[in-house]
Length: 100
Image (cartoon, rainbow, N blue to C red):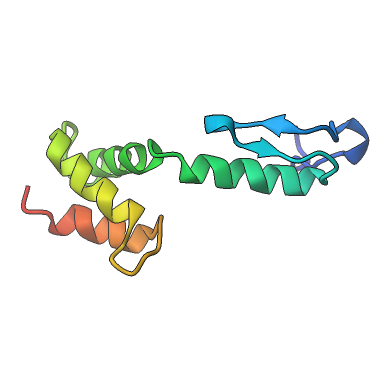
């Protein structure tokens, strides 16, 4: 419990893996490549924007945001206006400058 987690290739399954939405990670990758693919898959899931948006709104503004407020913030998470997904600076700006 005192050392950071690390991948041990000997214990890593080198077979293909099926992730969310049927995405398959090919066989034969390193543990780091599989972890990167899994994190990318989670990041691209459509529920991430609303989840992150709601959590940030609840901590920064109000405990009970309206669905419309969450949706506006989630749209900024999905696309910051320049085509980038997950731009937290733009998300926080959208939260704090929202008329609600």
